[in-house]
Image 1 (cartoon, one colour):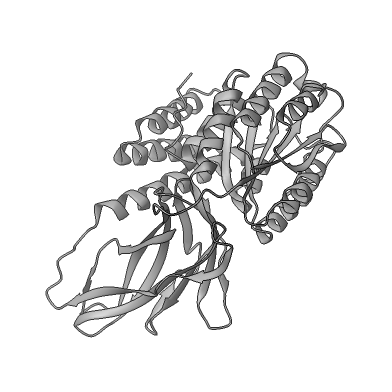
Image 2 (spheres, rainbow, N blue to C red; image 1 turned 90 degrees about the horizontal axis):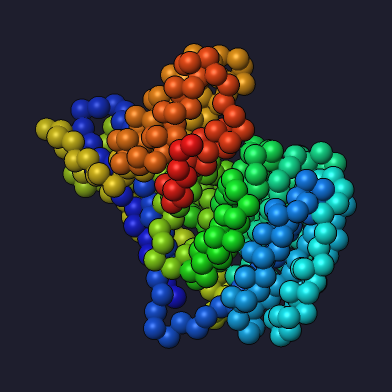
Length: 418
């Protein structure tokens, strides 16, 4: 297994006359499969809400979705199942799959009752997942249909950050329309997983299946992007770095003892690009091909039980010219638009929370235009529909708000308009 790493500037040319210039550096990263690579076992934890509101068809469909995943797990894979209402319990302790029928029976016994304490479910789920993390791809699916009424949302975020420190990936699935999108997004972002919206019960089986297919493509784990900048180059002060594919996530930055910046990437998928966008400022540079940065990936290879591996250090150059002509890279422009769409939607939501309906509608229209520029027509339709509703003096339903949040983050999911 190798790492594909490609840094590209949005405009590789730089004006030698300018005392300061701004550029976006897009860094594409993926795992490249090789013929001799062996399959790494999966270590999956299902953290399932079985509160009273899940009673009837919702819980039955979720159990069916979970059982389908048991059928897809292979010999050597690991599974644990945690169930929570206003308390949490381990339904299936972390174990190698050797008796799938017994596991299915345990899942089928689940009945709806009680309130909702997401943080307790998350705590137990992380504990179970951590037990099987050695030489595996370790991911959790957290599904809930409600608010964290019996729990603490800040505790949820702390647990998600703890999971990231253990190299565990958290995916969240909001079921129905009454879950807290801020809480589930923060958990997924901190755990470098994805946020999914299951609007109707029957979509649960497909969404579990889609996420499972995605984690089957993971090849390398515990990846970090290491970025060093030339003396006359600096990062933007506000939100300098974000992931824009496969999902848009604002990323925290930390500085290593050697002065380099480190960004946690988590799991790398085979031939599926993780794209990181960095906003940098460059001081005046002499004419010619000038090195402005170096990028490197630190990662683990569970297939070979190898940790702390490094890719070669790849330099990034700017072409500093006296007669400046822009050399725009269209792929990086797409990444810039993806981040703009997300941030414009965030601004719209903030304005809506402040009671500024007109400002929110304007920002959603702007986000819809950005989505159209990207060719993301599905997102553009959802965003424009929400803007039109606000302009007409109508409130956005919980479903509309959730669709808007999801399409702002990704173009992988096709969420049809109402």
